[in-house]
Amino acid sequence: MGLYFEDLQEGQVFPTPARTVTEADLVNFAGVSGDFNPIHTDAEYAKGSPFGARVAHGLLVLAMLTGLRQRTGIFEGTLIAWMEIRAYRFLRPVFIGDTIRGETEILEKRPTSKPDRGVVVQRVQVFNQRGEVVQEGELVTLVRRRHG
Image 1 (cartoon, rainbow, N blue to C red):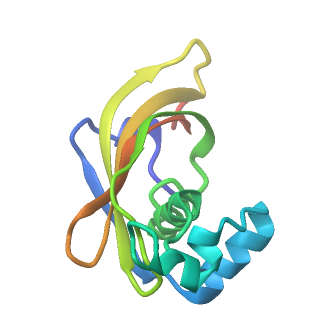
Image 2: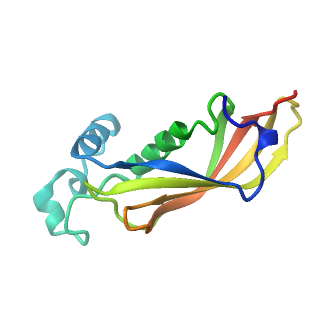
């Protein structure tokens, strides 16, 4: 079981495992999302772009972050719902072959009017293999309380 609202403290940081972004990830996400923009799917087109190569969809990287967070088990069975994504920024491109990892920092927590849950604001960052921040923002979530 994951951490409950009461277990979380402001300032706690939880790192995720890492994973490499593959060609299959990009192709599968394009198929699921319907986003076949040539910057993602056309190598020749992408060579002439400011990036010089195909880049992963920003939302693919965000989706990967959610999976990496899930693998930590921190919110396993205790995360009720996402409520909001705040000030999310896509800072650097992620390329096929890049290895990404995430970090979650607990920024704020507050009880709700319902005794079985609380609101937790988390700062999330995604890093590439060079330690550069490629994405960051805040997630506002509902988390189960231990006693409610």
